[in-house]
Length: 201
Image (cartoon, rainbow, N blue to C red; front, side):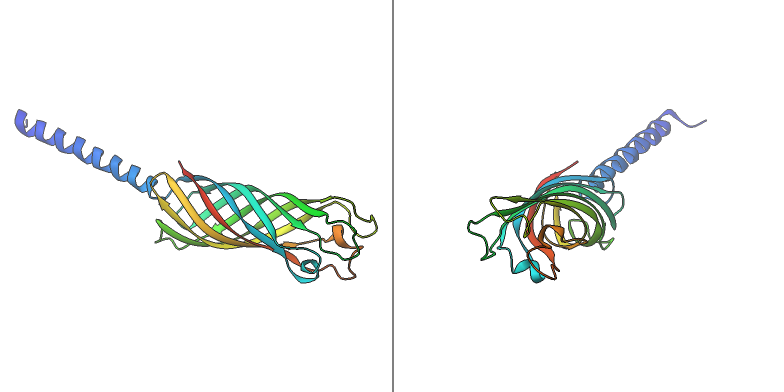
């Protein structure tokens, strides 16, 4: 039977070990190593490419995103995105706008050994509603719902309860029905660059 002093020292060592493990786990969570949940806002600029780019001007882009980081190298995002671009078609008497409202889900991959500063690439699926605002000819433009494939790359900076970052996203539009009447081959996508700022839980 162990002397009372040795047993007390053993218990104290056990509690200290558990406390250190708990502190390390909490620190690991704060530093974004695993179990990370991020909510952030996005703001930037976007424009269309290809033939669609000849019909539009650069405009603001915005969004809100929920990111879940189950491991250091794999993340999942769901979010809402929007943008507003002017229609620059010379056949139009006014200056209408193309307003985009959409949602997407994204799978992200990043190096497992980088957490405080985390570069990433991602791909996913989304759907967008293109709303033509203003007076246009119906045979040129019309509001439409379009599926898309977002491709993203960027970098995130994680410290404590805050997250910030830079990213660019190219959205492959699987249909360009909103502009089919305006141009013979309405090919192109949507490219945007944005800043992100949010909180980590």
